[in-house]
Length: 561
Image (cartoon, rainbow, N blue to C red):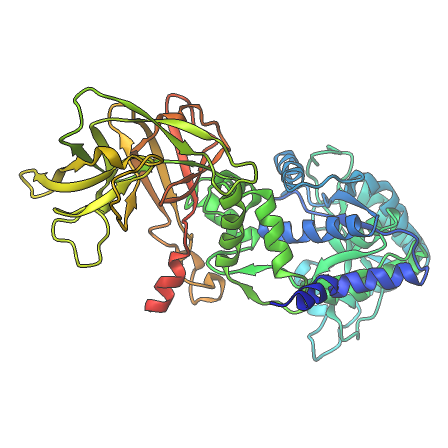
C-alpha cells in the first residue's frame, strides 16, 4: 500500500465524525457531549464495546465529554451487580466518564414532564390490557382505533396519574400513554406507552416509586436533561427517532438528537442479552465470565487486552448497514497485541518423556531464554534449567515419520529451543503399544548462542526439564458455536453449541519461571498459542486459559470444507 493511500485513509472520516465536524464548524455546538447508556440487566458484551469506543472516542477526538448513564427504569431485571460490572468494563477498556448518572436520578423530573404533557392534552391514562392496546394500535397496513379512555379530561388524567404514583392501582391496571397519531405509518407513534405500574423495589430508589417510565419516554428526556448533543444508538432504534423528537418538541426542552449506526454482529456467537442469559441459566456456560462468552468480562478472563478490543473496534469502523463480522478479525487483533507484549514461556500440553542418553547423569545447566523478542525494550531473559530428562510434546515424535517431518523420529535431528541439537536414537512402548519414552543423543558443541557444530537442522521444538517442571491445569477454549450465525439457524440456537468449545488438560508441564504467574497475566506458550492465568488460579494450583492459537486454524478448516 502506498504512503499516499495510507494518508488518505487516515484523513477519511466516518459519517458520525462528519456530522460532528459540521456541527462544530457551523457553530451549532461549541463542544460535544455524548453518553453511554446501558441498562444494568446483564453484563456488557463485545457489541457494547463498539458503542463504548464510539461514544468515548468521538468525545476524546473532538474535545468533548461522555456521561455514563444507567438506564435503570425496569427494577425487575436490574441489579447492582450489573452496575458494578459495567463500570469495571468501561474503565478496563481505558475510558473515564465525565459523570456517573442514572435515569432514576430524573424520576421526579420525568414525572413532571409527563404531567406537563397531560396538561397539554398530549397524554392520557388508559385502563386497557396489553392485549387490548396491541389490538387498538392496528397493523402496519391498517390505522389504529381510539378507545373511550383517550377522551378523558385533563383533570381526570391528572388525578388518575397522581393516584398511579400513590400506589392506588395494581400492576398492569393502568398505563399512561402519549396522545400522538393512531394513523401514523410509524407504529411507535400510535399512542405509545409512557408509564407502567410496577410494585417492585428499585436498586437505587427502593420502594419510593411504583410507576416507571418506558424507554422511549425516559431516554430522550434524559439526553436532553444532560444536554447530550449527539445521542448515538444502533440501527434498530431508527423507528424510535420520530418519537424521540416528538417528546422533546412537545416538552420544549433542550433538542438532543439521535443518530444511528450498525450494531456489531459477529460469527460463531450470539449478542442477544436474552440468549446470553439463557446460556448462563441453563448452565451451558459457567456464568457471564465464562471465557467462551462474548462478554467483556469473559474476554478479559480469557486474556484479551483492552488494546486489542479497541483495535478491533477501530478496524470494523462505523457503518449504517449491518453486516456479519468474522470472529477471526478479533482473534487477529489480540494476536497482534500479544505478539508484542506477551511474555514467552515453554509449556508441554501433551507430554512424552525424552531421555538424552549421553547427557551426564545428575547434571543441570542453566540456559537463557528470551522473555519476548518482539518487545521494544528487548524483553530481557530468564534462566531455564536443562537436564538429562525432558518433557516434549507427543506430536513432536513419530515412529514412522513422513519425508518432510522436521521433528523427532529415529535418525532425525532437531534443535531443542535455547539448548542443543539432538538426534533421535530410539523409543519405548508400553503394553498397549503407546510410546512412553523417546531416546536421543545430544551434540555438546551445538548449544544455542555458542554453536560450533556447523550442523543445520530444520526443526526446533520446545521442552521442559522433568526434574524442574511445575504442573498446571490448562483450559483450551474454542468457539462456542459450530455454525457461523447460530441466531439465523432453524430451531433452538443452543442446538448448535460446539461440543469441543472447552477441553481441560489436568496435567500440563510448565517451566519453573511460571511459578510466580499471577491472575490476569498473559503469556505466549511457545508453538502452542497465547494463554492467560485464570482469575481463580492459585500458587498451589496454576490454571491457564487459552486466549487464541498462534494461527487461525478455523480458516484452514473452512478451506478444507
